[in-house]
Length: 94
Image (tube, rainbow, N blue to C red; front, top):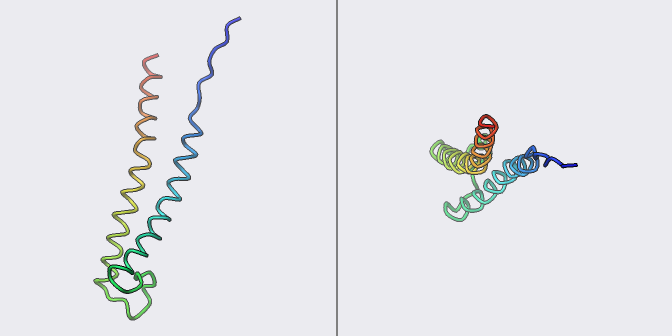
């Protein structure tokens, strides 16, 4: 009797990618908040209803946060998408 190897569905990698996709942006936001306080000398403008927060300060914070978080999300998800595309191509060729 020959046993066929069962093909893994990749759910382990998907779970790790999902967890990293949540945890890494949260960690980066915390690190950026600390870095902002050290560089600028003030708290990060998280509460936009605070009258002490200026528009340029809020805009700068938003841009920095968006670029860093989205770049990290791309870096986390790109290998998973690439792996998925390679697996799909391999399945089609079989």
